[in-house]
Amino acid sequence: MLNRSQFSFNLDGMNYPIAQSQHLENLRPGKHFLSVSTTQWRHHGFVTKVVYRGSVYIEPCTETFISITNGALLVDNVVALYPQNNHWNSNGFAHQQNHNYQGQYGANTNQYAPCEMSDYEFSNLLRSLNNASFESTKLSIANTVLHNNFFTTNQVRQILEQFSFESTKLDFAKSAYSKTIDKNNYYSLSDSFSFNSSTIALNNFIVSR
Image (cartoon, rainbow, N blue to C red; front, side):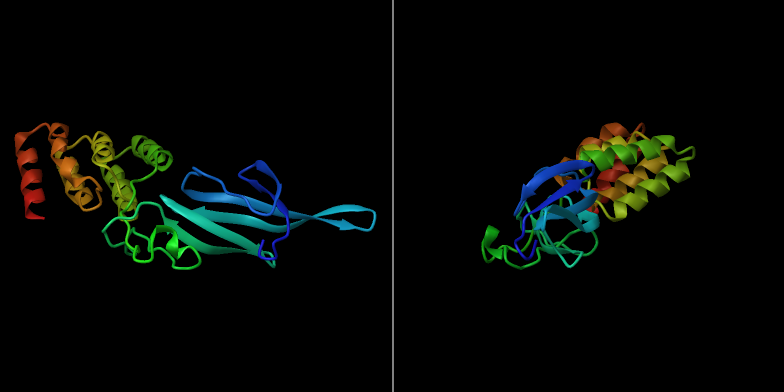
């Protein structure tokens, strides 16, 4: 709370005790539902008042600092947890917001590497691909998710296993290359193809990047 008062809260159905601050670790990325209450002494007893009820979105591989004031949730800072030399941009990366916690990784640290899609979200993706009836639908779903996420080579391999046609596998493998965080392992996808010509085509594509 910005006024430093004590509060209790419920996150995704789980209650947390009264405190002046809380630090939760290993939350899955994505939307979480949050209800925050304060307890104050009023005349003949304590009165509990809900001061916020809504949601908060957690980006993958980040630490998020939030506060509540006047019934609104404020995201004070979002700090990436893995400093690297890659530049983050609006196509899937996220800049550190330089607020009160800028010095956590040093004054000159402001560039970070992307993180792969979380296990939870990736499982949902595979379930959606498995439930799709047509190859074109599967490819459309995969390309849509690819636009806003990053993958490991192993995750790309699992997506390729959802496709039936060699041409579809090759098209997606080419599209996913730029959004893969361990490109040095991409050669291992050769065993995902039935024809040697597809492996050669993918390798030539990688070399040309």
